[in-house]
Length: 214
Image (cartoon, rainbow, N blue to C red; front, side, top):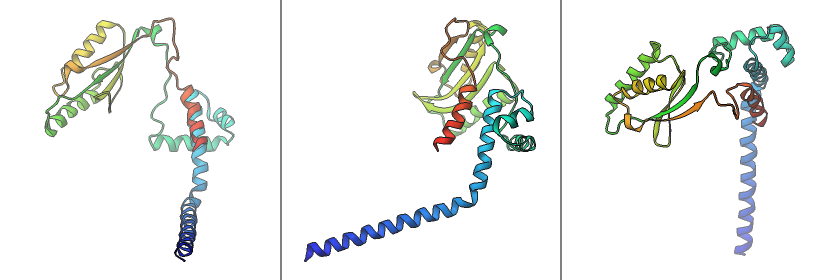
């Protein structure tokens, strides 16, 4: 009798779980349904961004042909992406070694231990002010993050090792950074072997592949 009662209770629980799952899926579908049209538009945006990353010199007409939409759609989408700050700039990638840059440096830095929040905030503020003022223009990226016990990464192109040394001296001059813990990985751009030179082509393809996977 007890076993029969337990079995009936288990069946009821399973049925209730199935109903709740169906209700959850229905609610999610109801929420996402109105955005189907917007999602399709986003797909066009991603395709356009991908094509611009491959070659931003093409005309709107050429881009429209590449992604299968009209030229006015491309023009409107580009304007929208620029206003939203998704397209930040149009540029090109040179052969850095041929224009005088022999090194690519990736430098990891960490904050000093024992700093209070005010000291750390002041140090970060000074760093931001120097960056906005155009200090160390050879730096192409500087971002906070985490990993390997470090707090930030700085990527720069240098013309020679002397220039790299001067950059390290400037970085180590920040009072909120632990100067003795600064570490760099240096790439010689003049090497004959390049496993994958810097490019956006592969990322442009991955952008669409990732979209299809989701």
